[in-house]
Length: 315
Length: 290
Image 1: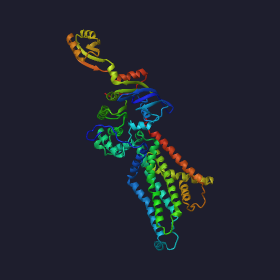
Image 2 (image 1 turned 60 degrees about the horizontal axis):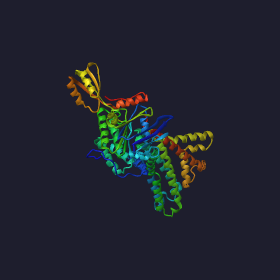
Image 3 (image 1 turned 90 degrees about the horizontal axis):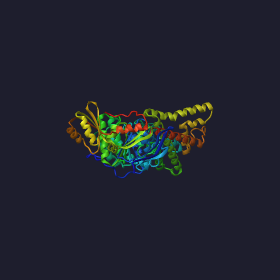
Image 4 (image 1 turned 90 degrees about the vertical axis):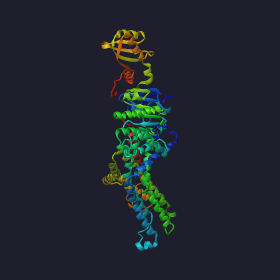
């Protein structure tokens, strides 16, 4: 059974179709939700949480119907919203305890878990401070702590690295990786940043204009594509290229000694050096380029014929 | 998760029943409301009239003390009129307390956009309002029906003549009158607070919601030469209701004579309007827009 199953899901808001016939099943441990602004990412999350009623089709979260089992879904889900959402005049530990109690934990257990969650996300030292005094990064982390405190089966993170500086972003990504590695809960991570999804997710759902542009298992996608290698060489590149082709590679030579090779699975990088030595060529620079999430995303967008807006890839 | 290991562990302990979740909101709401020194100060102030009433009852029920203080006068008589005065005083203190507490219960959630996170837990919009409503009703009970019924019990105990059996209806009337008022105040308080983001303005708006329609009603009465404008006058409507529930003498000397159905209709219409406002405001803020 998939974590999230969509069956011709349609959501209309204000007379406009925001999600249009989404069908698919997400089985990954960490699922990335990608798409340009207005693609319907937040609407999909809100529909899964039961805030929006589907106007057609249905959606299932952990096997529960989003239309009829919304309370049971919310019981099993931890949600970290995109925007600031907290109670500023509460201390961190009190806020997380409050949220844990709302999820059904008895008061004593909620207090214990609140302390643990705050230490886990790195806010242990500031847990008695009022949230209104927290920095932006701390506010993001306390939203994550409250989403984790009750031990959900599915963690929904909406733009978790939004507005964070590089250090805080790295800390957040690291936390997400740790949670994924721990393995007891699934994650749905919505983000504009391809790199965040690339680093943290094993499956990706790409939305464009309210439709599914692609559902892709990132690791499988990478494995299914051959390795591209770019090199800068000197010496007898012609003989090198001929020998590589004889070994079953696709090889192309360009001006300035640049050579591009598509390697079959049977060959490794060491073979390149061996063949270069045998043919009297020297490898000055070598760059391995895997098929990245960016390629997957761009292909999905091209396929959909959509325009890409506001999708950024941090340097 | 554990504090010393800093790692995550799933929760596999017991969970509370779904119906108890609004009580969590109520508990935190009460803590929030009563965490303010001003709330405590207002509540203490609200009990001072009861202390005065208690002294008056002692004097009335103690023949020697009564003789020494007021002689043979019938000024100090503990009856429906006396308890009507007690109830009216306490209920207006409740308005002051509600105007202070209600914005504290709601505006913090709205100000920091906490609704999306609160309602992403197993809690419905109705559950959210119910939790806040319970917190407000419990707080207002502290200055309304609880002290009034304690005074009633004291009178039952202290009266030199059998008194309780003949006045049980008075206790029921006071309880009902206070409950109707605090339910109304709670709904108005929550509706106003959900509409106005700033607490101070919300406090002022609450008085405005009670007294501005009274002025409009007065103008309507004067221009149209009718009594129906009194239906917009909450203080008058409630006084009329309390007087009828307690069986006290008519303080308006028959000038009003509003039908019971009209009074009930106004109160129900006002309550429904508050519920509609609450539903609209919370629905608008329950999801992150963007």
